Image 1 (cartoon, one colour):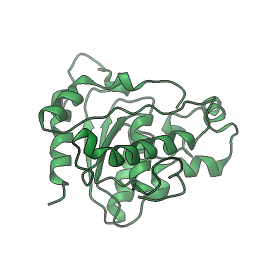
Image 2 (cartoon, helix red, strand yellow):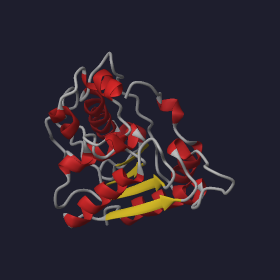
Image 3 (cartoon, helix red, strand yellow):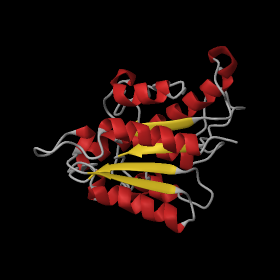
Image 4 (cartoon, rainbow, N blue to C red):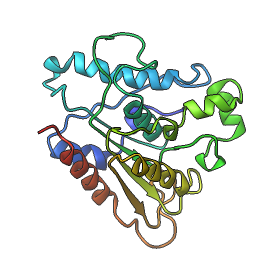
Length: 224
């Protein structure tokens, strides 16, 4: 939440989605410490409302909106889906448009910030929230918002991720399953954080296959 730019989108996933007929928008959001959380989530939800409002201009289907992201991007995509269409985080322009999503791909995103396994260090927490308060960590955790009838979530997690540990994705997956929500978990062998290859063997499944998995997941949850 302190660095990054919309140009960082992985071309493998961009090409997979574009080739399948999906329009892809890569979203910037304000960064900490200049802008504290939940500004980042508010910006993501505003972007969804903006795309719905401008759907006719861009030739989009406003009723079929999905999201995916890596690391904090995955966390924010999951939070956007789990917090619903008109939540306390829906502030700013286009208030009449919902920020709901049909499905999400959360790729090694932090899930429960109250645990060190999330990858958020004490100094990072201070930067993002301006303080170290347990309540802030809970409200920034996708696990906190899991409820029945939540949008389907595809979780992609590297087995060898030492930044955001696999226990994070496993916890969110189990919570979604326990609530009766549709969730799918893809554990990637030989992968660390941000798709880093760990050891001599290639990622399994490959990035290309992960891209196909995202497309298939979204396809399966289109409105009929």
